[in-house]
Image 1 (tube, rainbow, N blue to C red):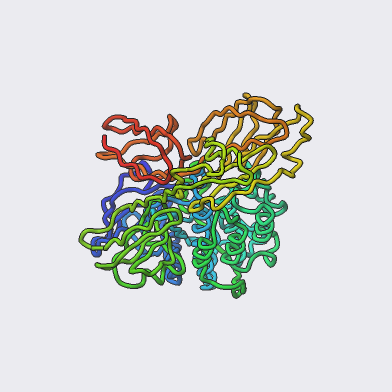
Image 2 (image 1 turned 90 degrees about the horizontal axis):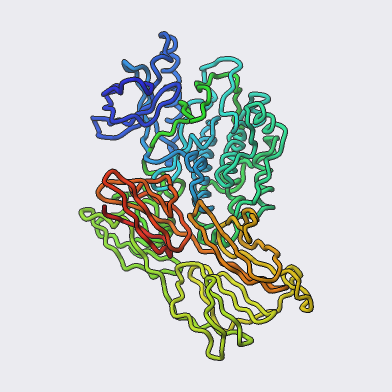
Length: 636
């Protein structure tokens, strides 16, 4: 069923609702099973691909094999196959419907996700692949297009259409299986693959997910294949924020090793070591424990060897197109409760599955005073009368919320930040206090009072007196205590001989995201937090921008010879934008976002923003001061 073909009303016994996507070889439609009222995604073959009965039999046999492979895999992070059949339209495959987007959508569109969120997705895929390998199944086409991310942010591995079982019988000599950019060296050179080939492909996927680029880039298939076989992964510049560069290189050199025996023995052991490379500022100990809890396969013990010959089977994959419309990589919306490891055990009990969301995200969840393994933003089983409470560092704990199946649960539970009165004292006294790039005064014996220290966000604080200084970014939930001791600068990078009034000074960036910097109109490129720029003494115009976060600001900075002047950058916040009645396209500060006002989320820099909604019922603009995660519900 191609784009120009009329949509059928039924496929087998299934009632077609709409087309989800179409590729060169076939289509995927959303349908409903009238017997049990279950929505399914149905994969069909394009009619002109079936030239005779032999072709029909071939497609049917391959759908049957995919269903048989799926029957061996019972895992919450693997899309389930429900049915295989034949109809007037040809063979079809009915599978689990997951509402969401393929992972390559997030990568290609550079959707801003935290390191923690990305690693949660990677951990879910790792668990799914390890499960398949333990059952003697090699996927052989691991790539972002074959991973769905549900609306709850949970991953689902799909499309085992070319997966290999030891007793497979469909054969054709000399056919390459897989997608070139994600193929392993041995898959390219020899056609011999085992579970370690999937681990290599998974390493390429995670490299792209975290860095936004391929480890083996090229403009032609021949170039890509040559680099996979002969060259080391490209160096990521600038390094991925939040992961130690030396550890990044060590981990990816191992998972992308040319020799299969030198790679990690499981996908989980690879992710486990990658988590260890994440900096404390990106993920605290609680976050690490919760993420590692997803990886239920302990240790680094190897799985039994699973071997196949890639030239023994035919892969039914069309030629790649720029838009990625293919049978295998099609971006269908698939969705069910997706979970991994501990999530599966949790969902096996009674009660109703409920999505618990908070503002801010990732709050600790208590159900009947029992702390849950997952943070808010996930599904939980609730029964009538269950008490739910949320806690987050820097925010007031919520009151218990009683769940009622009849009344449901609030779509988003707002949490109030803890706002405290703080007195800042210094040793010695007489220091200039700068909080969030704003001068607050000079310390006295009584100190400088901050009436509203917001613990729900990061707070960069600087105290300076002559060549004495104190710099610290207080994390969420932190605030100054006691007397702050200033220390003399000792770094030659920031101190010049005091008798040279013409010596350079410095500006330093303090904050959580990279920005493009211009100084007096001269482009200095994109710089990370902690970067320094040497400047002559005097007044300078500093232009800062991060278009993906809708941040643009111009400041005038006075640079003193031999001294560093900090530039504090704002934090980030997640906006959830809805309108009623109807939805429209969302722009922020005059820049299109690519989302609609249907409850979609987007990450922005904190500070003032203008939100514009353009819909069929008209356009409206709203001015907002964003200080943290926020749900915006507008009415036309």
